[in-house]
Length: 136
Image 1 (spheres, rainbow, N blue to C red):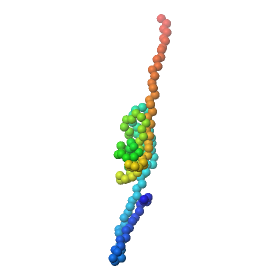
Image 2: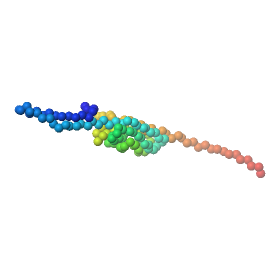
Image 3: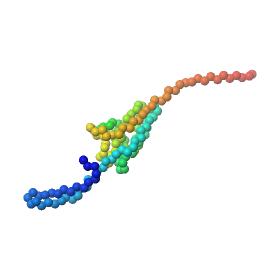
Image 4: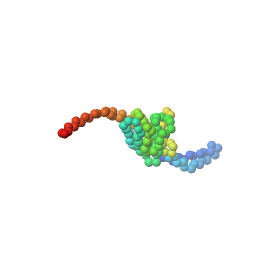
């Protein structure tokens, strides 16, 4: 497994003559995109919220509803959720050129970001009586 950008040269040798020649250099770029920060959110009652993440420069941020498999439900540093009514987990990962630490079947590389939904406070009706006295 490569972890750094590397140059490779292949030397080809003919078995009959023993002559050999090097290939041209092959340059292998290693990209290791990472999610750097995440910002969860909470809402009061049913609604939507904006979840945020930052990634290494040049990386695309993908948003998912499951930790493994599936297609992204959004891309970019901010993900505006659909309307939800219960606490929901979303997952984010980073990719460069379509390849990266994206959740794939059998893998679990998505970073969990929880969107908390708090119930709205119950409203109570309060009656207030005013007594007015008038001197006639």
